[in-house]
Image (cartoon, rainbow, N blue to C red; front, side):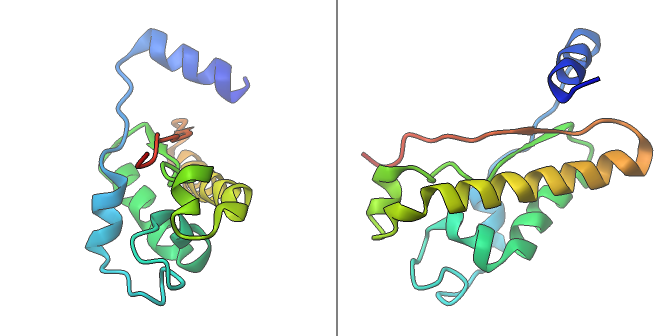
Length: 127
């Protein structure tokens, strides 16, 4: 069964629980300016500079029983990344964020056979 069909099937059978505040969880790791590659507060950069932190957030949510996590891509849009001077990295940071979430979900699904899902996160940015 493909992941879309699997997700719809799960929705028809039970309440699906999603993760919570990605940004708050990332900040709890106390990332440094170097972790942000000089772009302080740009959480999406952590997808490539500190994938261990992003994966840790996904894993923490799965560990407490959520069914799905959001990608760390809320600010991966032209307007938000332009504020940091890195608008040209939208694709790179988005793909990295999606890959990390999917890898974590797949790992947890293999553990007990219960499917875990990934939701793409798209935020409006600050404008």
